[in-house]
Image (cartoon, rainbow, N blue to C red; front, top):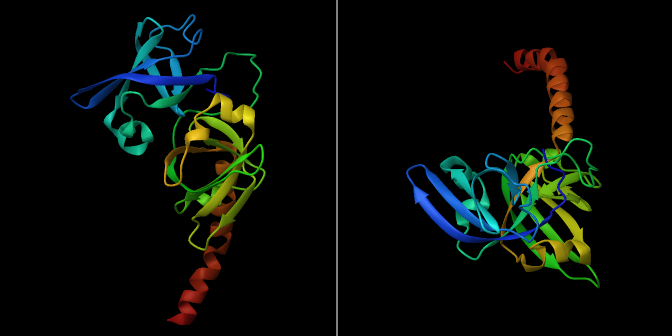
Length: 219
């Protein structure tokens, strides 16, 4: 479990491909690896990975083929910057919201605006994922817990949402370098997904008899 509060930016120092697997060697910020052990979970750009080896000022993480294809980790190269967060400890303050580190989809930056002391990302979301995104709700973008400022849902349940980033967030993350067209890892807020899916299933169940009646009338 993670909180979505990015603890630093790590750099990819080494990439090693093996059959069905890719190893990422990361150089982490000073102090981040204090007490880190092999087998520990770390969020890397929002993806929950397991530390498989430790080295001076960094660690190795193995990434499966499926994870490489479903997330932005497959596009990383030596020198790439990524958000990192250690797994939350019991009793720790949750400054963001609870994250699993399981990415739901990749989304693209549709536009970037830079009003004074802010940076606004408009993020295009493919169908059907916008059904879970609401203004003032939580969402995780590359592992960072953010609040949705505005959202627009299309008829096909695609659409877009915007997040506003303050200077402190820009200082602690890679979002200052994100450009139009960039791919981002998105994890939707799980409680919202459960509520939406439950309501949809209940409504569909209640409407089922009426749909059958309408189908008979059409026939």
